[in-house]
Amino acid sequence: MTSLKFGTSGLRGLVTDLRGWPSYGYSLAFLRHLDVENLATASRQVLVGRDLRASSPEIAALVLAAAEAAKFEPVDCGAVPTPALALAALERRAPAIMVTGSHIPDDRNGLKFYTPAGEIGKADEAGILEAFAALGENDLLEFEAMAEWEHAASALDVAATFVARYADFFGSRALSGLTVGVYQHSSVARDILVEVLERLGAEPVAYGRAEAFIPVDTEAHRPEDIALLKEWAGEGRCDAFVSTDGDGDRPLVADADGAVLRGDVVGLLTTRHLGLSTIVTPVTSCSAIERSGIAATVRRTKVGSPFVIAGMEEAAQAGEAGIVGFEANGGLLLGSSVERGGRRLSALATRDSILPILAVLAEMASTKSSLAGLFDGLDAGFSAAHRLKEVPSADSGRLLDRLAGEESFRSTFFSPVGTVAEVDRLDGVRITLVSGETVHYRASGNAPELRCYVEAASAEAAERLLEWGLEAAGRALGR
Image 1 (cartoon, rainbow, N blue to C red):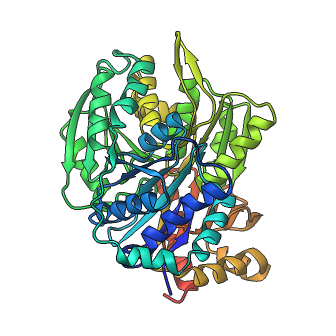
Image 2 (image 1 turned 90 degrees about the horizontal axis):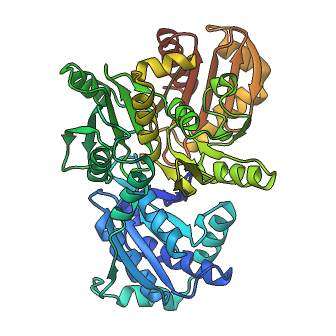
């Protein structure tokens, strides 16, 4: 049985299941889906990018070969952040395929698909699966007859345009006076991040560059990443620390003491800095988003950028303006163009790490505030999140079904921490206790994991509640 499946962001699975025919076949199926739906443009170009995983070059070569087999012109963009590839594809009205597993371990990888109009939706996923199932013997024979793909692909440098997008909008003095630590690890955005910080007037300090892939998660933070940030903060050099996940579509932002800001708080600060008025965000984001009053309208969705994008489209159809989407992992989607001081930042409705990083730092610089001060000013409360690894989806599903549908089981389960006041079943099970604290369980769409998100009145209380939430779920799963 294959591990490959569409999750919250593209097709993901074990490298052993993805390499070879599946990489080729799913790419071929995507491009045939475009033809069936008349979504392919006259140029017949398809842009292909990749992250820095060990398996990504091999898989990218298969994607390029599939593009040629589908009678498209393959354009090799090399190692590049996902939002940079998406921007280039939108500007050229071309489809794109990004080879990345984002933040999941190096033994896994995936494919993200973009139509000429942007990131695929759930209907496209169904179309790709249908096209993959329809691939025939001739397709397989063509693949098997294909030697290692060495045909010439056009090359395209999309990084310069991506950097210019933000340098032109923010200006060369937006971050003047700030010293910013950059945790580079194996992020494909690591050099772009240093360059754009310099272009905006900051002094970047590079830390932790790695040759082997490191699965940095911007939501369920690894203890070793937190320890590194604290260690570098101890040097007293930096006003803030920034990083991204592996493919550069989710930010990590920490204050001068190495304390990490939650991604939804980063999104909220970005919304305020850019003057946006409509927020679309999953149910996992903190309840302070509504309390803050920063946005006139807040729309909640299931977790995953396809759901956020759908919510943003609904907001636009309803005539709402200043639309932004973001997730608890920090990935931010700009649904409306922003104009300020005669400069214009065009919409980019795919997850981006660079914009929220720059917006938060620019807010620091313009208000002469520390990052900790900006956070305190929001009165956002405290959240924490982590995961239980190696939890099969069937096991997660049984636990979530019981928590959602069996009142006696639910009451007994949560009795050590309080009385259940509300149950939200939009995505997983989100419990609000009488105390106002929340515990939210949901199965990851990208890996065999059960995720737990909590909110409480203090950082210490949030950590205690998270520890309890993980232990309680583990016991219920028979661990």
